[in-house]
Amino acid sequence: MSKLLDNKVIFITGAGRGIGAAAARLFVAEGAQVMLAARTESEIAAVAKELDARYVVCDLADPDAIRAAVDRAVAEYGRLDAAFNNGAAGQQPGPMDGLTPAEFDQVYAVNLRGVWSSMVAEVTAIRATSGHGSIVNTSSVGSFAGNPALPAYGALKRAVNSLTESAAITYAPENIRVNAIAPGTTLTEMLQDWDRAQPGVIDTLIARAPIGRGAEPAEVAEAAAWLLSDRASYVTGAVLRVDGGLGV
Image (tube, rainbow, N blue to C red; front, side, top):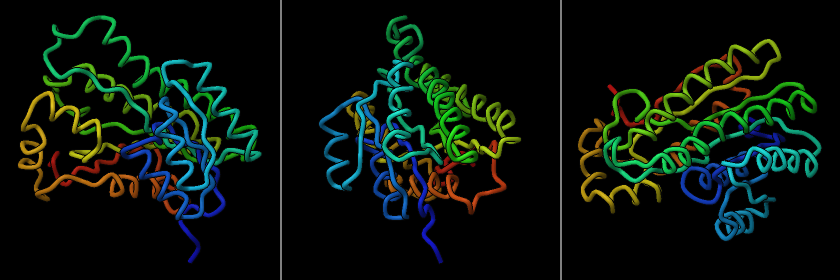
């Protein structure tokens, strides 16, 4: 059997750490060529060196930088087949009235406008080169219900779900599939930051998950890889929970 992502050119945002870095490792192991994108060059360069892959520094709050990064992938590989929009910004945990407008705007610029800008650039590139393809966005289980600890993050991830569904309907006639994954308690640097700000958060979340543990980033990356692959050829518009039963 061929590898899951054989010969696919995939653009990955947020690839310097966490789920994005795990996805980069998995996608390469499954036969893909990847263009890695992240804001912090030291992190993205280390992952690229490990995988002998190419990378571009990209601030997801800057639509021009996103377009340039996607164009770079096409210039390097000659086409774009798929994209994993995983990059995100966290927020300081706390109630709505504790977040300044500037802090909210930063989360919005990365977590929603950045996904919008990425999909627009990616659809343009896929349409002009491969002619068909697949996009996966990273949402969160925090998007499915009220999220008093991370209200801006949760609200904008919920908007990503809607954006994913709208894009799926829009681009299905062009054979471009668009889905999302909604990770639960995943042991990433972002979650560790939240736990440092509010000690005990990780233990509380794990206690709520029927599976009884947190996910490794590589486990979440597996779901993204399948959705990007041709084996998910009839799946579009889905927001797939990868949460150990947390939302059941």
